[in-house]
Length: 443
Image 1 (cartoon, rainbow, N blue to C red):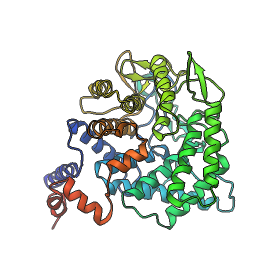
Image 2 (tube, rainbow, N blue to C red; image 1 turned 90 degrees about the horizontal axis):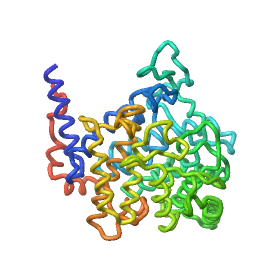
Image 3 (cartoon, rainbow, N blue to C red; image 1 turned 180 degrees about the vertical axis):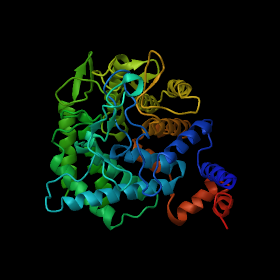
Image 4 (spheres, rainbow, N blue to C red; image 1 turned 60 degrees about the vertical axis):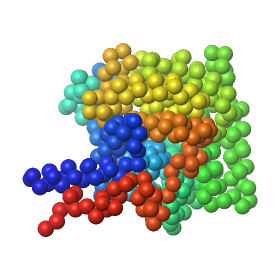
């Protein structure tokens, strides 16, 4: 037993040393990276959004969901973050996992070319996601019923997933990864699906039960086609034409006046505010004036101190979404407001648990964590805000770049021989770590 404890301790110490980050928030970055690693099922490379089910978004409420699955929505952010920290093995394993899941799903719809092959979520192991079921014999946390097993969001349609998966392939190739036959098949078919489906209603990034014309989903379809053009070209210019159609549709029907500001609305033809607009602005789709006006409108309507509700119809019905605060911080960085962004970041770090962990949400009045815990999305957001802030301080003009260009400027090769060479320069003890036996069981 003592030997296993020593090996386990050595493994985590060595794994932490591979982390590229050496800035002032090293403790929090390492804590979050370790959390993401612990949420990952090593056998498949998939990671769960959280290891818990049914911790409530409002005490006594019924918004209690099972998060013990992997969401494709998180793919690009997970891969972007892990590559940025130097953990190419984990990033590649997850993309391989997502590709394998897609391949298995696409085989089931091989005869139906009009079918959608990109699922919302996947199980991290070989067992299927169970049907969403209420376990009525359980009381739930502080009487918050029902306790659920399974998640009905599995059957939803989310347009933004197209952008996330192709953005992930873009990141992967930039770091030295090879687009093999399976990934190329996924790339070409997903591109075709975007062209066919982008005008449709979907359930949106927040997985609401009713479909609508969500603006963010349309923008991520544009992202998907732009990344496809970069990866496989656009000989006939057809993808460029669809990109132009999407842009025209969003700018014509998605820029609406709210509180005397012309902002990016959550839905086409419907004036409503949603924090996902902050994520949309990281793509390079909208001009900076619209982005700033939208951020100001979101702060006024949804902000509570350093916290931000996710949409104007959720204020008071649930906690503030922690990932939204990190999107807010990233947007301030994009505007060049580095001092204010750093102040907000420090306040968010202070809100972490004594062990440096975050849930999905927080009650702005009491500071109590709400939702499933610990939450991968929140920790990914924290790391990205820290990396963005420090990158903006070091490189002039860095903060205004869209995410894919930031990635190109800040993350070099991490896969293959070039990746190993870069690792030796970024992590001084790389050689010793490669040949260390402290974290291995030897006879």
